[in-house]
Image (cartoon, rainbow, N blue to C red; front, top):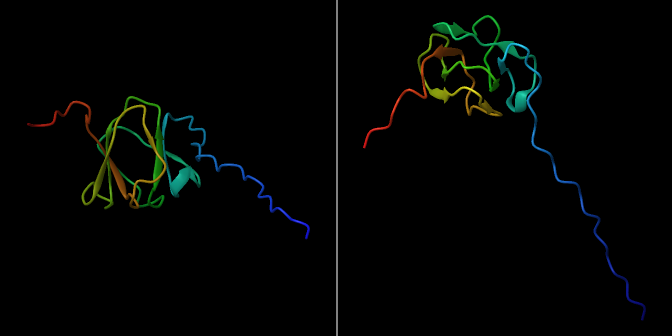
Length: 109
């Protein structure tokens, strides 16, 4: 009886999503994995996304820091953002960004 061997072809590993180019230095994207059209994020007070739609991921190659918030007025669930960071999924749809010095804050005992 002849023996037949089954060969399984290896599949290529899926690559991690890479951020789209952002000429503004700090951009927020409507979809996870940096999908959709990124809009510039400015480090001046509370920036609402009420007119552009919520944001789900970001790239930050600037010195701006702060928090993404789930509501359109810098309240609700938040996620800290430090300078030079990126996130492919915030875990919620952000309705606003409020500037603050995240790296200035120290943790208590």
